Image (cartoon, rainbow, N blue to C red; front, side):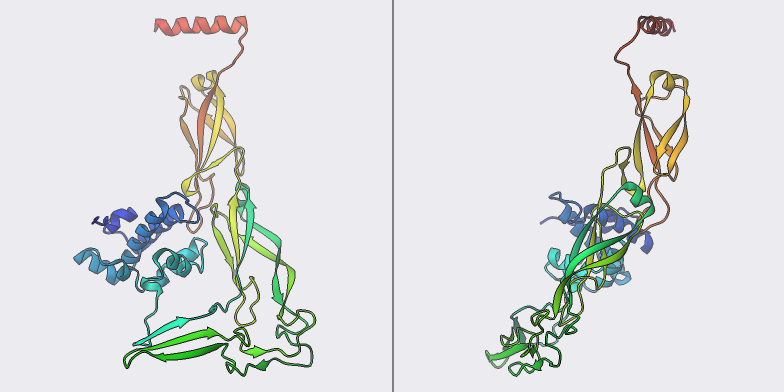
Length: 375
């Protein structure tokens, strides 16, 4: 039996940390260990660990109990915490996914399960319960320049949308769908089995007569053949905010697949940040640029122009600068998504060693070497 780590230690905060400090720490760690972004074998367990810590420390009552009595069960830790996670996941660009993610990782327990109002009953739900249209995943590639400024774009999304000829009813003009006589419009049939005087087994199954729609179409629409939806290519204007992270998913509500029995699905825009020729992206909005200079420039010092995402900047190289020295250009990095300010551009210094030297250059270097040896 292994003991759990201290929740404050897990999130890397002090016991006196404010709610905002706890939230900011969890946001950074969640971005780092989210299973969709981090494919290492330890990422999922780490994500569970930091999420449990945040579920407790972000709730005043749970935090007070934890400070007094120590750890509680995992189910108790997550119970009632959905709102906290929905808010922070939305800030991170995973809006609307808190319930799905935690059901997958924790089996739907804790704060994301509802109490059973039918005490003494057990249920076997047959058929599909999904009433919302399907979500659509759209991948978009961004450069670091796009991440710096954000990007507005117009995309074309192939999807099923409501048939304009029948207005989504599936019935031909001049006719209407009729209420299914088998399920009386409920879309489900129900069977009740009395197992004993204390327990009743109820089986809800998709109505085979209307396929769960609750209606029967006798005269189908010629355009959509009774489905109520047609394949279209819809043009949409999207706005990607600055500072987004690679692998982040943004949500455009209601722009997914059409559903004839519920609301449309969502368009999920997954971000892929392309590698850059000059810069490497680091954590917290920082970027790294490698600068190669001649030996004499490092020894004597110089002033050079360094490329940044906003254009060239002057940078002073002090006399006697060593190889691998890191210099910093404040505020020349990327915006921090979901937070304030920009990161810095770090400039790592390298030396250029010539492969071929003239006789004069060799002589000068030898003379210089003699001077150094005399010191």
